[in-house]
Image (cartoon, rainbow, N blue to C red):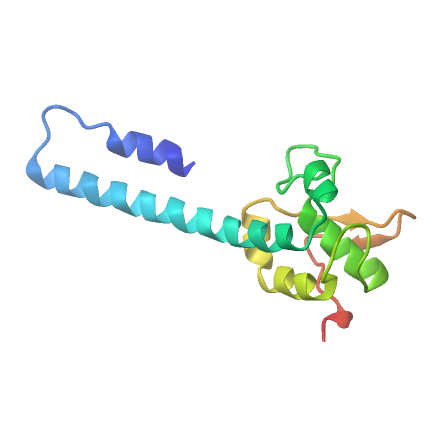
Length: 139
């Protein structure tokens, strides 16, 4: 979305007033700053998750959810591991710390589609619904 807005803002008509040109340049800068901020938010989370995952987990799982995606994201895996077992395992390290980090960045995860809306464990027991994955074990 930001790249589309940036492309539109960068298309300069040939007959444009200086005032309109200033407004256009300001808009371009604002869109670029917003895109950069979003990229930094996502990269911060991806970097943290990558640091505590085995290579095979990174190779098998996506960082983002896609329409009708049946795979768990890496953020999902950390949260599922914490809620199910409260310990490291399955190629994931420092699960408790990463879980706390993900809880504190919940809105970013949702905004960038880095987590699924609901999740179940392998037995079908619901772990969270409507992105409500924070629980009593966090303290």
